[in-house]
Length: 399
Image (cartoon, rainbow, N blue to C red):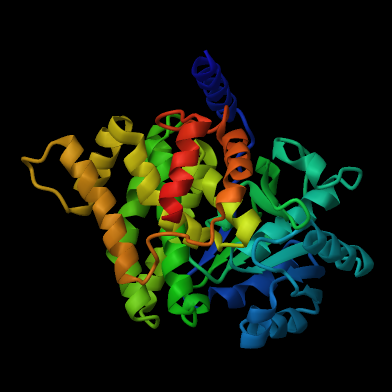
């Protein structure tokens, strides 16, 4: 009966999603596209912005060109660069105070998924000052217009430049949860591949596998549409063809640009079609042990896909055919196994570990509860798992 309840809820959300006010950000794409942003802000009468980033970005000087361009356009700015991986409630509240005290009109998220999450959290609080972040947890709790929001990704993986989600961590309870609302979609996005050239190899690999997770979970879920399936297919093909190239040669601008495109498409796909147990488990590992989200997804993905069994044979066989790793005589089951093995091989080639040994057995019961609660009844997974099955997955991932 519970499975039926979950499927009814998922069907209802899929129906409602057709009528939500989806927004696609205005895109600036290609080499040196970042230079176009200051004049674009002026055209939209945005004269004072908060830039949300992290200390690593600041030390690398990646923002220097943007800051110079803002100054030339007489756009004032304040910088909050204290964002931590898996940004916390404290992070967001600190950045909000900077936004308010500086009299900002808009927000620029500059960096990877963490600054994006932090910036969206600030935007949600600006829109709903009477609500705390825990009160905004879940689906469609913001529901009011946010300030103009610009997303400038320096990684190719999260797809945050086109998604409706801000993921927040509670440093006291180790809970990691999402605020989901179409109003959190950025108004503008800058996809300049030059910003990703200096990425360390392990960031290139894990963020790229994050994008693959988005594409795969959106494709195999039960809330996909012809459009989300097309986005997932294109993203998957781009990732298989370009991720290792970008990993091996960080200066390969063509591969970097195609990975940005893949991340954007995968982000659009999972925004409409949702994710699944890979993400639910990954969020608990981020909350408990601060495991980077892309790394967690990369390790978890083959275990969960195998555990789904027959429910994913057909869709994963289709992805396997797309990537050219199958023979015409292969059954769907064989193709599915080849696709999962290809994921493991990609991880191995990029020095991503097979397990996450830091998982503590004593923490598993609470993580199971949180992953189960996050995924069910909303996530339209191929097969609904019970708590015992989730516990088995945690043990497999640890060992």
